[in-house]
Length: 193
Length: 112
Image (cartoon, rainbow over the protein chains, first blue to last red):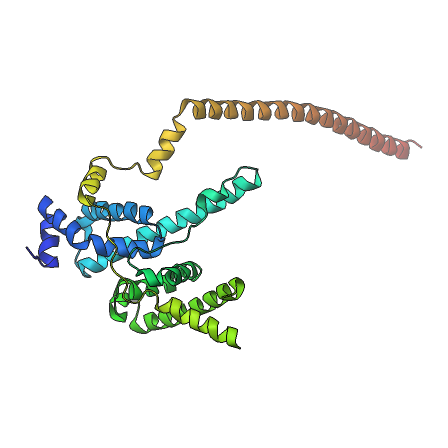
């Protein structure tokens, strides 16, 4: 049975287990795909998706309804995914130090090429190169690009999630594309297409 | 020139490669796994730190470190105390010498 966001939130705040089940069913793809686009690893995305829903369950009481429930959910997903990225970068730095002391820690945290399961077979290789380039542009640009291209959100929706203006999103998307082109150009020049 | 055009073409292809991307799905039984997590919460960073500190090996190491630091401080304090005594003695001698020299000068002046 379809329920509006307001109804679901109210029931969730009243501690109804059935409402939580509906929330998970209804929003799992949204959360999983957003996180997957950022962390580019299916296992990590799975783990973070679970964390996001645990957080929703635990802190639904603090949700005041200032924004849409889905916006709140997007924000939690993005925050958790970016936390994971930071933690990975820290581990990578630590692995570098380990390597300096003779231990082979680098390989463990070396990013592997990412194949998004939703990309059609013909585009797999090109998408892999694009995701690699995405990792090299600033976080905000990457977020705007991911929300636009993978989640299919428009600039207004992205602006609400990122707590910024429509024009700022427009600018972020333009800079993301410019930087991606530069990264891809460098990649193709180095790899001789 | 041809190579440059080819690169431009490749870039456009890459940028358009995720157009119409399909939604990926998480593994089945997500709700069951979330409920399992809710029933067995993951420890927070503080809890992890507390359990690490309370490990016997870490405690013994910490205790040894504290004792070591204390011994070092005591040893150095004793050493510097000896040095201070020597310095004080030297200073006393020099003061006495100064006074005796001064009195000798006045004495010489009054009783030439």
